[in-house]
Length: 263
Ligand SMILES: [Zn+2]
Image (cartoon, rainbow, N blue to C red):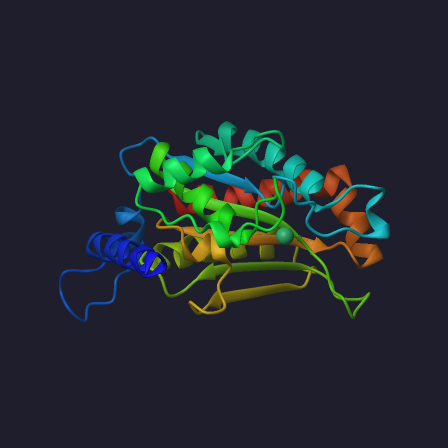
C-alpha cells in the first residue's frame, strides 16, 4: 500500500509537470523552440544536478582494465570535470554526492516522508550501501531540497559476455512526466557527441517505463543517464582513463546541455 501511495504521488507530480510541458492546443506539434522556451530554468538561472553513479558503499562495476579503480571513482572524477565545464558556461551545478556524502536511514526516511517520496526499508541491501531504489529516493529528496533544472547520472558500462562491446550509451525515460524535455536535451547531447566523437559507437535509448533506469524514471525533471564506455573492453577502458579523452567527452556533454538550454 505504501508503494502504491508513492506511485500516486509520482503520478500527480508527473501530471503537474505535463500540464506545464504540454501544448494547450490539442494536436499541435511543438517546435524545438516551443520546447526550449518551456524548459525549466528559463528565468536565467539554470542548475544542473550531476550524479556520479554508485558510491554510498556501492563500487559499481569493476574491471581488471581500470588500474585498480572502480566505477564510483571514475564517475566521481568525470562529474568533477563536467561540473567545471558547465560552470564555465554559466550553469550552477549541484552534485548528488561527493564520494563521502552519506545519509543515514533515519534521515532518508524522515526526509522522504517530508517530500512524499516513499522510502522502502525492504529495499535496503547491506548496511551502508545504497541500492538503485534508495539512490532514486535520495535524488528526489535532493531535487526537493535544491533547485535544479536538469539531472544527469554518469556511469561506466560493463559487459559480462563481450570484451569487444564499446562506445557510449545514453538513455532517458520516454514514459514519465518530463519525457518531452528529456528527449530534447538528450538529442542535443547526442548531436554533440556525434560531432566530437563520430567514430565512437553510440547507443541511444528512449526507455519505456519498465526498461528505464530507476534514477531517470523517478526523476520529475528532464534527465538522462550516460554510460561513458565499457570497463570490460580494454580499448574503452583505456579511453575512459585517458585525461584528454575525459576532457573532450565532458566538453561534448557540456556543450550538448548548453545548446539545449540556449546557452
Ligand atoms: Zn553504473
